[in-house]
Image 1 (tube, rainbow, N blue to C red):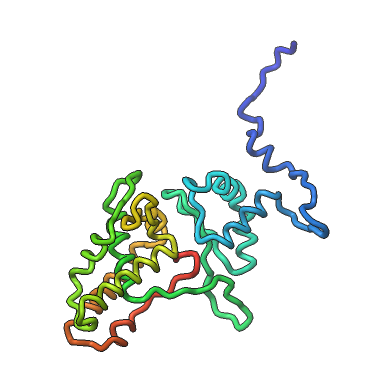
Image 2 (cartoon, rainbow, N blue to C red):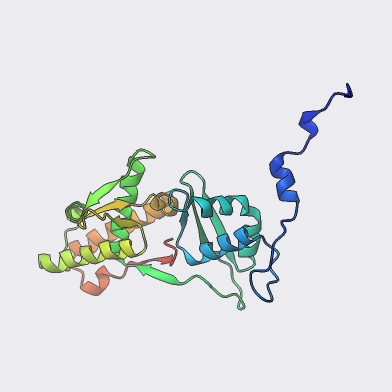
Length: 239
């Protein structure tokens, strides 16, 4: 055996060798011209079809997203989409890039949160930020209704109409997966950690201002249309 010393630091890492070696792949279908590995393609498909990918819920998908992060970013950029990975919360999602051109097309379907939806999202974001990182935030339907106690509502003068608006907001945030209904108790919900990723400090500030506008409008006896005038657009992936 040679006594020549080996500089182990000079050897390429296993990951570097793996990434630099093209992956052999069989076509998935007739006419398949993809340049990406199958797992990267599947990760791309899920990013485009899901509101978000969480490591806790989709560990294998998450590993593909992080492994092919650079390649996915390139592919999404070609469609004017931005890959967002919140490493602190282990959440990945796609958002629409904004710029001016007559030729661009928005591929993400836009949805609208009305005033009550936005107020509820604001309160839930504050609850999540106050909780410990690994702590599940549970909230009941009754507790959600109590969050609206600060709204001196002159628009929906009867309690039934006011409660219905709040219940509609609960259903809306459940639909976009910010609230997750607990199987054991239909009247109880878990606040999804995704809200920490999509509700940035600037968004929270904006929604807080909307909340103040609603309270002022209610105090002036604003009509129903005025109360719903303040809206916040998010895309179908929950941003």
